Amino acid sequence: METENKKILSIIIPTYNAAKFLDKGLSSFIIDDNSLLNMLDIVVVNDGSTDNSVEIAQKYVNKYPDVYRILNKENGGHGSAINEGVKIIKGSYFKVVDADDWVNTDVLKETICYLRDNENKHENFADAVLMSYRSYVLQRENTDEYPYDDKYITKNGGPYNAGYVDEHLYDFWWGLSLHGVIYNTQFYRNTGLTLSEGVFYEDQEFSIIPMAYAESIYAYDKALYEYRVGDVNQSVSIESSLKRLDHYEKVIMRLIEAGRDAEHFSIGGKQLWFDKTSKFINDYLQLCLIRNTDKKQLRKRMKLFVSQIEKKNTDMYKCVNKNYKVFCALNKMHMSDKVYQNYFIRLLHICLLYTSDAADDLIGVD
Image (cartoon, rainbow, N blue to C red; front, top):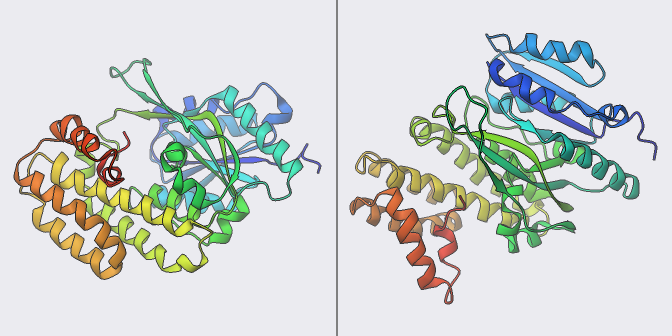
């Protein structure tokens, strides 16, 4: 199969007012091998930016017109940008890289070769490829000092089906995220998934729903993605999360709704969908009842929320309700998140380690 002029990997970069970060990210894709560079298709999806993000991206388009493109659209949020990007990408595979993040250039070269070589050997190589990533925390404002934390998957090779991935969930855990996954473009399009727009946390839809349909999953234990964290305004911060409860609940209900198509999931896909979705729900309950310092604020809301889950999916309700009751009890004891993470979880794990897997539902992966 001739791949010299073929686009192997597309990168979708949802971009909204990211001018101070964008140059670092875009420059990280410049490979010192033109044959590999030309196998990249980089689409900057400008989601209605009002800063000079477009001007920064245009410099790369001007210099590498066969590699970089800009898609301008009205502001619709992160999910909207991915939805529009998926429509026009040219690569056999694609990855989403946020505008304030970047990639390891050396690993990018290896990844393109990995995809190219395996596509030459197998006509339908993979529905999804799971990779490791690194997270960087800004030490001080206006510095480039980022201590990193490796988020490595501990499996390699394939093909695996969704059932095998679920059975070894925490070996693959970090790859089962927006930062870790690369999808086969045609496979993703065939799922018919349109991400929720105008909300945060839709990356959970991106990483959970298509994976439930995947029949051929490979693990490539290289850390490609470089994820910047540490900004209080990021959606993952406690302050931001508590302002976006509606976003959480919309995405959770969308994930539960996706389970109605379980008869079309791949082998083991239903259990993978169930375990990943229930974990996300438990994280949300923990945020509202444990991590939130105002212990009374969200008790009624969480009671109503759990009752809504019961109406949507009885099995999911039975699973999360057990943890909900525990969180309610700890909430009324005014247990802090620090005590919960450092003492309660560890004690629970010791008590149940040799007798049950029940501790896994309450133990977060940090």
